[in-house]
Length: 173
Image (cartoon, rainbow, N blue to C red):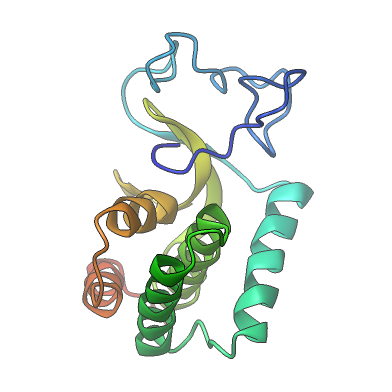
């Protein structure tokens, strides 16, 4: 969905989304322009399946190995900034995995600290992990937040953006 697509790159699965069932309508880029051909209107979501939960868990394990606590959004921001600096020094590193890891960090922070839950979201740009709120008209797709800023080499943005998103839909305790 957007910047760092989760689409499979092998010839047999060309056009299929990772984690999306082969027969799930709306997962193909039919127009070839990055837009999902049959999707119009508001984003739609569905609950996570086991493979999507495993993707989140794998990213959380990588964050744990890095010593980054997703509950500490300043630490997440500092980790992202450092990962981007390291990548600029050695671009042979897998930038897609770094983007995925920090997108999951932001998403998990939002899931824990705001009134949003993980889901698989489809909009005109494709399908990816996102966060949805009950009775809300908006979704948050962390991979788009991270991917676009990664490409622009933005640093220092995570704490402010994520705190703002939390403040918009605070979790009621």
